[in-house]
Amino acid sequence: MKNFPLIVGSKSIDTGVYGYQLNLEKVIKEPGLMIAYALKKTFLSKVPTKLITLIRNSNANLLYIKKYMKVHGKPRIEENRLEETIYAKYSLASLKDLNEALSSAYIHKNKLYRSEKFGEPAEGLTIQERIDLLREVGKKIIKDKNLFKEISIAEGKPLKVFDWEFSAIKKSFETNLLEWFGSLIEEKGLSTETGKGMIFLLRQPYGVLTIFSPYNAAIGLGLFATISSMLSGNSTIVKPPSQNPCSTIHLGTLFAEVMEEWGVGETFSVVTVPGQKIIDLLIKDERVGGIVFYGRSQIGLQLMAETVKRGKKFLPELAGSDPCIVWRDVDIEKAVKYVAKYRFLGSGQFCMSIKRLILDEYIAEEFIEKLVEEASKYKPGLPSNPETDLAVLPPTVMQRAEKAIRDAVGKGAKILTGGYRINYLGERDEAGMFLAPTVITEIKPEMILAKPETEPFYPILTVQKARKIKEAIELANRSKYGLRASLLSSNEEVQKIFATMIESGGVLINSEDHMYLDVKLPNLGGVKWSGITGAKYFPLEMTTLKYVYVENKELLSLLGAT
Image (tube, rainbow, N blue to C red; front, side, top):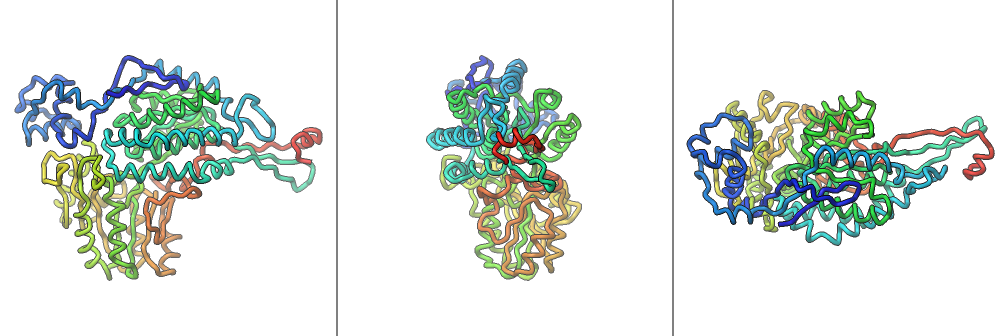
């Protein structure tokens, strides 16, 4: 069994109080292992099956236990096999540990920032030094690919998704991403209209940033936010996702090793505390300069309001309900593959997956027929199998998906494929951990799937038709989200209308990848419930802009500005 520590001020700590990561490679193959383990940890282990199935409770995890036992009975598994199901244990942090991490980060916050022009704080690192530090972290991460793969598979991430995620990480470190980020926050000197003095523009860190990493892309998005925070000169505290913390903790150990070597270890911590337990404390704590939050929009926007009221920075990385519009002049075969891949890969559990499809009525019938066929090719399986396309759905997500399907069918929608649970072999199973790729037509506004506030974080694709491009865009904009949107069309007029009228932080036209990432693309961000302010570059968001006006000739001479 692997053991992942707590990291406070880059020091590894074994708290003696642990959480446990089950090996989902084993659990997916035999879900009874997880059920038996859960029963063992509660009073339910000695309760008869019939009584358990009668318990009235809306908790998604308990509902899944009940459903599994109703379908497959109460699992009877030997003690030693249950122990073998545990992949790792990880140290849980107390509020005292969190306080120590905050104190260390706050006291030493000047260690990561030094003004190029003014040379202060003297103990801090320049932008270039921070880039060099992060380059060393990147080398360690790339070297540790096989261990990250092992951890990710144990956490349930399909190998296909891991390979995509890790290739993006590798590309980021091997290109000029760090230099590009650094250029965004370089200090600038401006001459004045009067000619009397100089204006200096400085990008300065907030001090201490806390990052709530997402469960669905822990080593991708979580790493991206951490790199950005440190490059911006902030002390950084990372809160791993409770569902799968081990990959984030291991990332943290690599950061900590390099931070210690550079003498700035006190500025970095990874604390495994339930988010709902600490978020209010962090919002109120005067040592915290800002919070980076990945999560559901309704929660994030409420937290943002509370944080901003206290004069702190809040960076919302929230949900999306991305539309894809496919127009009549496309290569249908190619477009079908595009839509299916970016809706169903990983069971659609990405904020920037395609969630809604809007088709030109002219090609709709042929397109839908081919799409249904293509959707059926996306298969469940063990995470280690390179042919596995789908990921398991957490019980809370599965609960929302099944509710949306029942609601849609009850209101007249047509399910053309999928709409039911399956096991890892693709067999229909009422207690399966996967949802079969689902395509639904005849969508009506009153359906849950069509409501503006719904983010379908599951492999369900709604299909609507439009006769004109502006009608299609109106359908696409009928959402409270605005993260990404894509168009497939070679018509230049259609492209221009889409680019300017779609309500989205990111717009992709004829891209081969709806989840395309590039060094110079903004770091996600969206409008409306997806982030309010639109696309953003993290280094600009994680620093404040200060202007310094100088007339003193002696100081200007020292600054090399005369």
